View 1 (cartoon, one colour):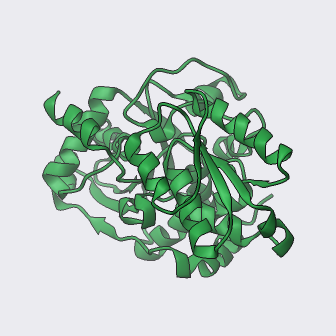
View 2 (cartoon, helix red, strand yellow):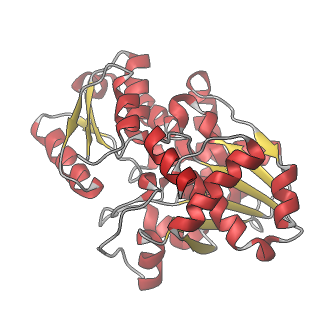
Length: 319
């Protein structure tokens, strides 16, 4: 059993020099549109453009000196890779990032900004993860999972701590889900300090692996379709510790179509003048889709990242 109150509080102090405390902004236009009191947690303004830095730095700071010297391996569709690269650069450690061959060019370039080697493998994020794990074993290096690691989860949980400090009357929190590291950390902390707060997982209809797995009662291997929410797309490791955490702490799930993601991204531009990536659009799209269910409540929408390419943005605006 993880003591989220304790572990997240410790992590928040430890990672403070390396992360931003992101704003929790009250949105007048989104509140008017939905009839609820909408607050946006702007992790799109985090270093590297996404929340992933929190988990990456907490994990790498947990390594002992011998482990640190071995070097780090990870796999990512982009944001986690950039976060690990950012931290490696900050701490002066060596490492390598594997990405799927179809990863966003914008996100790959973001990783390369931090002078960490990037290699391509397969066209599926799960295949890239399995390859990275095998590479780490073969070369005696430390593998850093995007989600299947308690230190990573606790690091992401510092978002929940900030939300609670910024707004201690939270009815709903809407969080995008891929492998579940973000929502596990946020939900684990918030449920420990505010049991009545409802945590809602938001997924693209084209890749709803976690919600389908929860419904099935086990992690399932399912075919997924391309989605604007590339950061949440793909499979989940069979032994993922995020699955039981989602079972325990997440109250409900909302699946969002590609058109609803596009609408959310355009709405964010029109109302907040913010550029968001698809995963953040999933959380905002879930609010817009189910506005009646949140009427009159304090609702926090976690805007997980803002790393959208020019080509994708053009596609969204022209469709």
